[in-house]
Length: 254
Image (cartoon, rainbow, N blue to C red; front, side, top):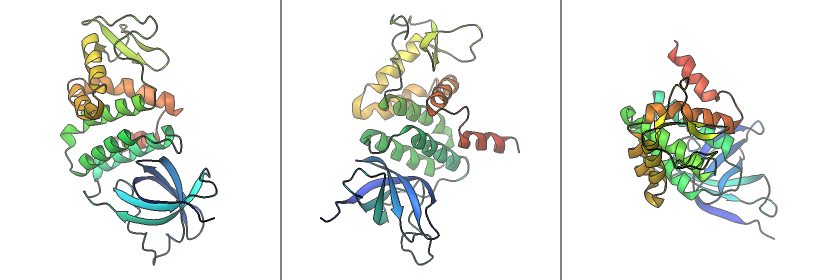
């Protein structure tokens, strides 16, 4: 029986590692099939047509055959082409893009599709390529919120998690990994008011418009939101510090 083929699948490469002297394993985020692992045979040879195409943070269309009954861990890459649209991000924006890739690698299970998250990721990567650093901060916070929500890891932002009581509009609350939203304490470094948390919740509920709505909602609170989301993401990643975050911190000290 002929192997089943997936053709012209929108994709981004998240990570790559050696398989043999001439081949690589590509961890790929696809729109309709989620994260998949593809064996790229012979791609390390200088004569490979795939070599200049298989780059991170670039929109691609890939074709591959499903190994076995389609449930195998690794499938075989048969074709790849650049889908066009933008150049490679540079500098801090490149590191930011690699940070997004590390989040997806750590948090996405294989073969679970997240079409809307894929579209949001593509929009963020395109923005990173334009070098608009002044708008990156709220965009990153919006992506982190949408990622957590899509994966079912974000509690309601309208209620105290433990009591299920509605947030008081002018009271301050903190998002904590082990407890969800709780009232802010004197020692908390960052917090948001009930109104601000509810604004974020409302933005996330806007369906296909959730991404631009969440970017707007994050604009005024991005700095206070950053440490809270980072703590929550690190908790779910099972790591005290992501590799890309450590690299960013090291470069800032040079």
